Length: 177
Image (tube, rainbow, N blue to C red; front, side, top):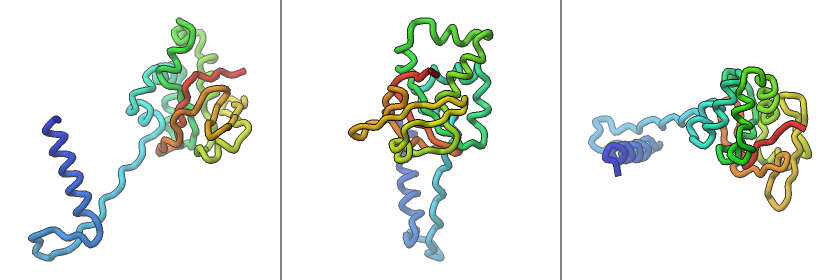
């Protein structure tokens, strides 16, 4: 194990224990409790997706369509984000074709089809029949045996909280009908 990570981990654990109310530092002159540490703030949708590492393919089209700034904005948004593996299921050349400047509006329509206004958590999504997207069309939502599908794509990870909404990870790219 990397020694720096070990040192960091021990420091975080020690700091977490000492920061609990009622825990005092040994040898403290005044023997006062330390204040509780502040919880880390979630990042915006784009930063969260980039940090996850499994949405590299999604990042390029978001940039090409001019949607990065929007999804970094106030929101809130619910994003059904296809993984890199989901993009790999598309026919060869699909993403490259959509990235051409002449296809910017088509790309934008596809990407905004994956975005629903508001912050809709999994518990709410599973009770819906459809959801109106930012591009004006509706996603079909089905739920069976605890499994939620968005236009036939399975939600494989839900409720990734972000500062401006939520991400639900899907296993296929969904396209407007």
